[in-house]
Image (cartoon, rainbow, N blue to C red):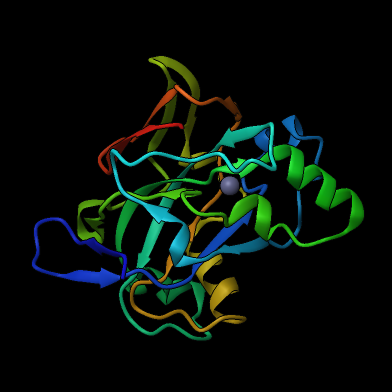
Length: 218
Ligand code: ZN
């Protein structure tokens, strides 16, 4: 079972479902030629896609174009169903760093055919995920700098203040559809600057006050 620690406590959470937002930063939606959605666009990754800091992303043989997307990750701390936005932050145990690895060529083919995205988004190793800092350490989740570098060169440099749907609204929206359980994770979307990695590259992802990941690609 994959687990993640809440840093500074003895709490460890078994990772459950990972609910992800697409197109939650306007500049990123634009760079992929997508409209900015009125309601959050959701998809999921299985817990089996999670890898830890230092582990390698393995690009599946059916893709020629694997992209990185650095994202602020929310760790759900208690059972959460039908929660109003004004209470939603009470259900966040911690904040972490995630990379939503995406097979862009496969995703584009699936999109064109109106098919689901799982094989482009949920393959083994597609979710590098850090441990989590306690929510009490992050008074404002919309004031965080998100960065991703490939081989030391900065590719993404954004701020969570640019999210279209904010953390409380995201949790309210998702919890009206899917009951969230302790250990479930929400990936809140990626800022602009996504791009391709190849075998041999090393990604470093960093979110201010939250943490970092160093992830090789093989
Ligand atoms: Zn993403």
